[in-house]
Every structure is written in C-alpha cells, then in structure tokens.
Image 1 (spheres, helix red, strand yellow):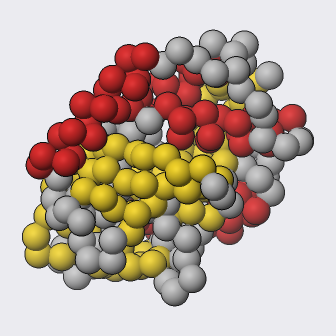
Image 2 (spheres, rainbow, N blue to C red):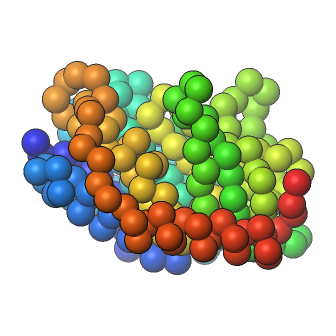
Length: 251
Ligand code: GLN
C-alpha cells in the first residue's frame, strides 16, 4: 500500500530533529511492504480533501511559530475534516500548541490555532526542560509507556473533558501542574515529547501507522506484523531511567 503523509511546514518546524519521526514511520512501513509518500505542505499550499492518510507537524520556537500560525489557522477546517474522516495525525510541541485554539507567545502576541485539539497555550516565564516518562492507555485495557524530552515555555491547558495523551510519571507535561501530557482526538495525537519521539517508542509509531494504513485502505486500523525492536526497547529503557533520575517534576 502507499501511505501519503502531509508534512506541514517542514522548513519552519523541525526542532530537535523532529523529522526523525518520519524516518521511523518510513522504515517501519517498508519493513511491512508499504511505501510512505511524503508531501511537503508549506505556506499558501492547499490541503486537498482526502489527499493524506497521515498529517505531521513538528516543533519550533515562537519566532517560527508566528511565521506560520495565520496560514495554519486558515487550514484549520481542512485539518479538522481530515481527522474527522479518519486521517491520523502526529503533532509535536510548537505544532501541538498551534493545533489548539491558539498560543499566547512570550511577547504577548496571540498566534491563532487550527482548533483541532481542545486546548489553549500561554507562554510562562520559566522553561520546562527535561526527560519525560508517561503512562498511556490509547486502547482501553492496554497501558504502555512513552519516553521523550521536553523543552517548552508554553503551558497548555486542556478543556474540561478533553482526552490527554497520557499521565505524567516523571517530567512536567502540558503545564507542569495538571499531571497530564499531550492530547488526543480520534487518531490525532499531540505531544510535547521530542527526541525525536518515535525511535524510542515503536508501539506509538505502529499505532499511528496502523491507522494511516486503515485510512489508505478505507477500512479498520491495519494489523501490523511485530518487529524485533530490541534496540528500540533498550533505548526506551535508558530514556525511562533518565526520566526517573532527572526528569522535571516527579510524581
Ligand atoms: N516555542 C514553544 C515553547 O517554547 C515551543 C518550543 C518547542 O517546539 N520546543 O513553548
């Protein structure tokens, strides 16, 4: 199968090698006999209905965010429609912030968001930096952990009833207070976790890939053959230990 990925603003939002997430998805798809086709979506480009099985947006500093925010807000309806039609999505940090209602940046500038995730972000005065360990339950009854690295001044507040990506075990998460990290709407995941995120968390890569494949075939999330993932498991273990030893706030 061919899985088409719409990569939003790749030349503006790619801090901490977030593009590595795409490399992981490409490789894990290829190992199962599928091809990932990349479509870069920049300022002024149209988001064609049904054109993508997965949308991806990385992180960036306030300066880059301000440059793309109005354009991204203009694509909001198309992004919400795509996710409503089963397209999967992964958004990291700066991209995650701008897929909410908006981000009040450091200088008080309001950057409008795409209004996919029910949240709002305000820049705080201290940065939340460190390794993070989360516990997630994306599929009811199956708890798994995610590890990553966070570095953000923005404090994201989820609306009442919104679904977080996970519960913080070590680290700051959305706002350093609530104990929650990230947000989920259907097959769309937003998170502060960089690293890049997917090399150390192969289960999440496959969760996203299965849904993107389901969208490509017009069916249910695909069943993917398991991969050995020994190196990935070792990387996950090392990162978990680091989060335990030196993550932000521990619970
Ligand atoms: N500029 C945003 C913040 O500091 C996002 C930074 C990032 O993507 N790492 O909150």
